[in-house]
Amino acid sequence: MQGKAKPDSDRCIDIVTRGALIEMILPGLLAIVAPLAVGFFIGPESLGGFLVGATSTGVLLGIFMANAGAAWDNAKKWLEEGNLGGRGTEVHRASIIGDTVGDPLKDT
Image 1 (cartoon, rainbow, N blue to C red):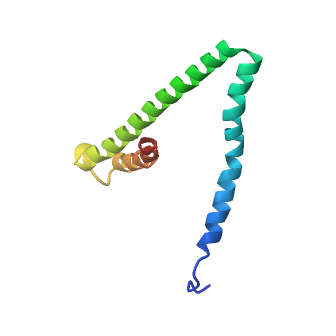
Image 2 (cartoon, rainbow, N blue to C red):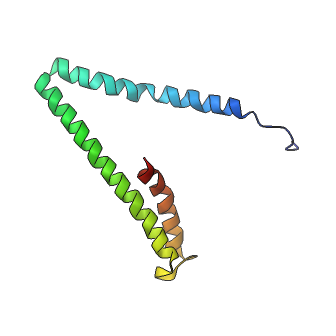
Image 3 (cartoon, helix red, strand yellow):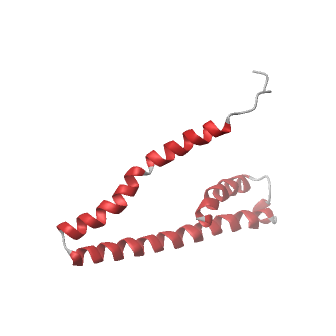
């Protein structure tokens, strides 16, 4: 293994894409089947409650994720300004982990 051959990145992308699509089958079916099942088996009033509950839960979760991600990002920036010992401290290392977790939360 000399490290001179070009990688087959198309194959890697194909493998990952197939895996992601297969893993999305069950959540996709659940999003379609659950409202249909509630509407047919319990009734239209229950379907309305189900949809309102799911929508409001999604909105609240989205707000929580955006705020948490931004808070962790700002905490790291605040520490890097020299507060609580600044860079290189244990607190700063923990804030880097928090920022790593928080970035996807605030960006989605």
